[in-house]
Length: 174
Image 1: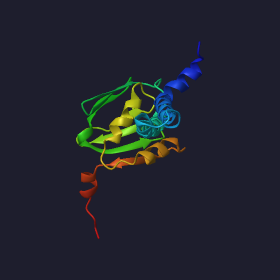
Image 2: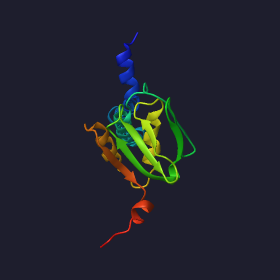
Image 3: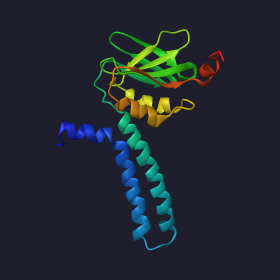
Image 4: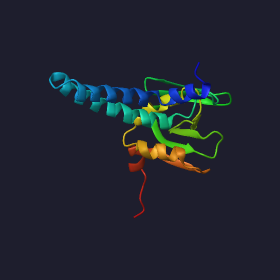
């Protein structure tokens, strides 16, 4: 009934659409209930919907589609990637650096953990959209920077986040 391209777009933007609907409900209560308690609840609902809308837009910008190679699973702060040629598990609490390698086809996240080889995860892997919430928990990560770098053309590797403990352990000459 709905074209596949339209279904794909609706799935990508579903969180933002829910946020917009909540904003609409809140504004309806504000402007059309005639005052009272529901009027003030409408302000809170509209504000909460605006937060959902903002988060939904960020998630939609992060999603690249799930038709790429491999599967991503996140379980208790551990990221697992199981691909056709490589794979591995990285503990978020032990993560030293997160980079974006735009030179690979498709582009890959590169997760570095001490004592393990870097884990390369395609942006288009099945389940990769869950990485947004996992990455958002990293202390000091700049989400907007990460989303902007995902859209930039190029073939370079960009460091998105580095552990504060790792940054502080670098010795300075001067």
